[in-house]
Length: 403
Image 1 (cartoon, helix red, strand yellow):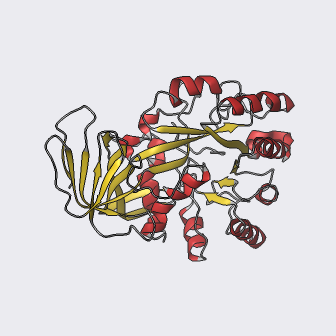
Image 2: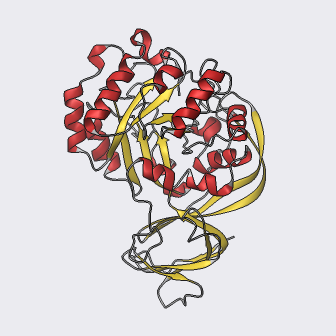
């Protein structure tokens, strides 16, 4: 239990007492400390036994962990602009997440609305991978964003990127047969060309062939991201094909980034456990949260982190994969995050004992014995109480073929 006193709703100093830093690097590891955040939201002091003063907000962590603010590298939050997106509040600070990266909900034709109505109004930092398909996920899986050559306009996409470089951090392409149809690998090649012209990384969704996972990997550069890396679909599971496994390992070694992207059809306990046992860790852990995955199996980032902990990832590796690793992938600074004068962006959480039955995207169940439980998310002087999302009751399972 964490004690917190909030004497005012106005911006005032915040004192975090008795918290254990994790995920900040070797120089900030484990030892309990206090952190003072001034009224401007800047870190003013870090050390033991900082004395509170009148008018401060005081959060007594009682030994809870504090990490850099959690980052969800793959979610869908263009609520109202697509038929699958949730609100940022359903994935953000109330669940310990300070940065949400939307993975291709909007294309060049509708990005302006996403920016005006979501990105610029949410308290969380919202960044975005621009969908190479002009319409994005307006009617996800009912109307393909990559139906034919009319679906992509490189010139207009580059203009949108140049006008929004402060928030567009990459290009997204869904490389599944159910999306691409007879196009095969061609849209992925076009997306890669767009990313190279724009000087941005590409995130590729992998799933049902064609194109094959192998074909996709051969196009990628260091810094590009493969999302759904631990999917259990026949033909694209990295542990069922030795050639594919060797290629994935080779790509990871040269800097291609493997992202979990749980989603409604794209995470397997068996694949994740086998890969981790063989020494292959994901670069980043993300949810692929949307309306059809949130209540059925994903729930939130904390639960997804707990699943990876349960299949063998060490605590610090899980934290890194949801903080500084995805931060580096989207160009956010990762050094000196507890430095004096740095804007505070932190998540306070506990690791608690549990006996919770959960599912992967294939319907396989597992019992989580340890759970990440977010307590507070902090951006500057804004402090939001957080908790792990727990669906009140099952709302039905979605077995999506592509996400």
